Amino acid sequence: MDKLKKWLEVAANVAIVCVCVLIVVVGVKRYILPGPASAFSTPSKGTRLSVPGVDWSRSKRTLVMVLSTQCHFCSESAEFYKKLLPEATLRGTQIVAVLPQSPEESRQYLTNLGLPTSNVTIQQEGATGIHVSGTPTLILADNKGSVLRAWAGKLAPSGETEVLGEIH
Image (cartoon, rainbow, N blue to C red):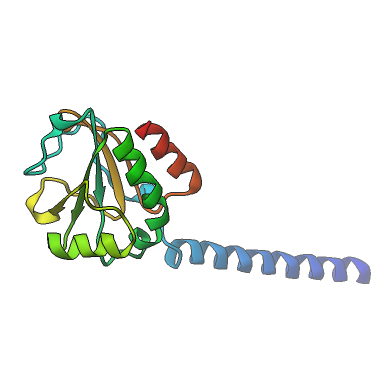
């Protein structure tokens, strides 16, 4: 009888520890760690974008980069953008950067990240009809300004490969 009592007591203690660990893991995931990129809303496929001064028909595709100088995920994505922008330019894809900051401050930010800006049209977010819930957001549009694909948040390597694949 003592063996059974001791075994039940150990099993109960192990169960209590497991429940406590589960509560901590759920709490950390829900309240401390940032949510997944899918928590951002992006324009859905087929949505027409409105960016004054952008001639969508100038190229077959346009890559719209919605960024912010205050977004650490944007800065952390700079290495990927250093590959993406030249590749997009090489493939004839027009590049538009939309930031909430002034065009001058935005161009300086992109330059500080080491990104080529000579072929990039920079627009201030308030002047456009593009509204997303988070940065960074990448939007690939066709020659009429209709959304083909959109990605939000700091992309995993598989997401970066997907974007590069769409640019090809």
